[in-house]
Image 1 (cartoon, rainbow, N blue to C red):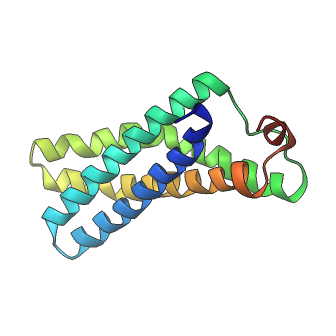
Image 2: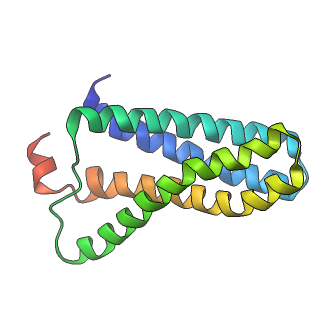
Image 3: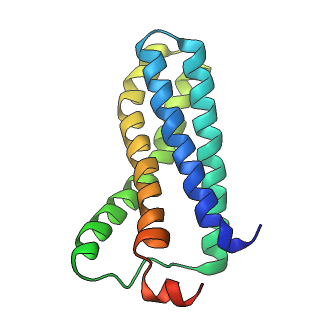
Length: 147
């Protein structure tokens, strides 16, 4: 696997996170806590692998999300900005959501998870959209030339 393969791998890991965050929420709403735990562990591992791949890729390649104008820019940059800002919030929120689990403080876990889940889900979904816009649908000229 080459460094150039990491964006697709990272988008796949984000998609896996999206699926398992959603399934975990679905299961816990129906009282299936064992399935919820399995889904959330899978989402957590997938997100951790994504973060590792993301950091490795950008350490080698740098930033690639510039060069858009017009309608694409009006959609892409606000989505990217909200994605990045909320991604910074997600990691601490996930940790704060996990701490009560290890202490068996389900009330506190539930209270924090109400905030963590939609933010984490938004970040994983927009991460996949960023990949498709940047690498598949509308690659900027600077990226297209580097292929």
